[in-house]
Image (cartoon, rainbow, N blue to C red; front, side, top):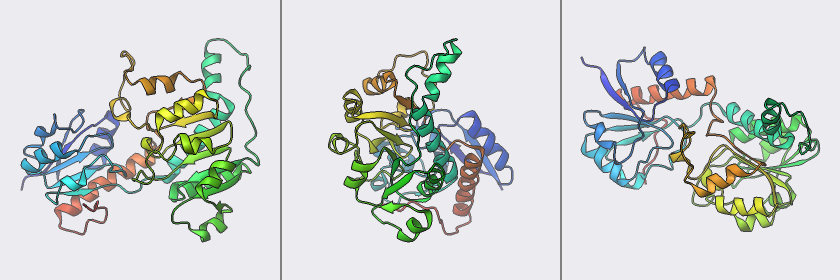
Length: 334
């Protein structure tokens, strides 16, 4: 009996290493491609019933039509988010599965790292001392102790982040459309409405999913409600923030610092080496020019534990599909 052929898109060396390591126990023939899945590359799916893709692949109607015509039966996303998939255009022609959770600790810990780096200017100090400049002018920060941190989205990641923040002696307030008051009591934080959070928080962390309701929730109007000098940290989804309004908020000094591990137009840049090219995205280029903005390339999840969990769950999702089992991680189609 021949092995099941799987085509992987947007694969980096570390992805290949993990899938080869944990795929040994499966009867799979895995083909790895560096290119992203898009209309231009979807023709490569011919001969593959199972395709594995990632967060920044472009899975729109044109891509989906080609995949369906080529006989694809399963799209296995090796990530939690699926806002890059036009689910309405799949029309049940093939199934979609994802990895709903891997390591909430990885993202919560990274968020704390961004907060500390921005507040104490650690990233700037590293660059300065590497050049032999040991001045600390401009590096003054503030104690996190007794500061107010506002968390938007109080799920698993946020709850771990809150535990970490409480260790610094911060006051934590949170907004979630479905508040869990029992968890709030156990962890020692308070649920508030968004306006209150904007008004009171010294630091705001975005830990919510991207939905029609949350898209561009950080915009000129919400920024106007915030404290002068507020720090905004986003390890959720890029489009939670209207980037043009963020630039204006930084220019007006309403926003004191921003830590971004995601960006709304990141698919053309993040995970790639663009060091020899001109950044053509004017807003991204402007954000990179601010001394009080720290941008990283969607790496908050990137720990050994998280990548291992993503790999194992993806492989199991595929095996469950082949075995005709219930797909517990299936993405419902509209």
